[in-house]
Length: 70
Image (tube, rainbow, N blue to C red; front, side):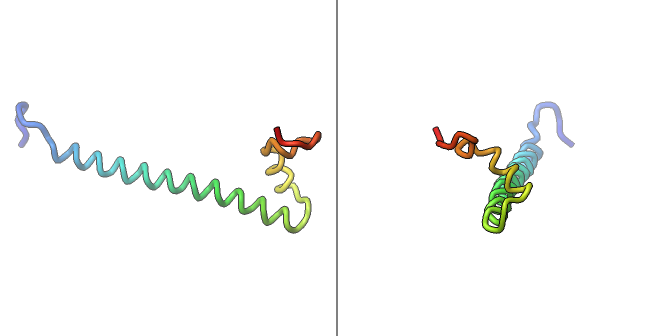
């Protein structure tokens, strides 16, 4: 049993380990989602103009109706 004068260091270590593990998993999941959306747009570009491709292009600033990037 932990008395008020003792610090529960093991619990903090567990919380830190679990937190870092979850942060890493969420970070990698975010990267995978971003990359998969870009890959889906590339596949749609290579075939034909599809609704998916149009929605992806609308997010890019260089594909504005006036052309030009900047």
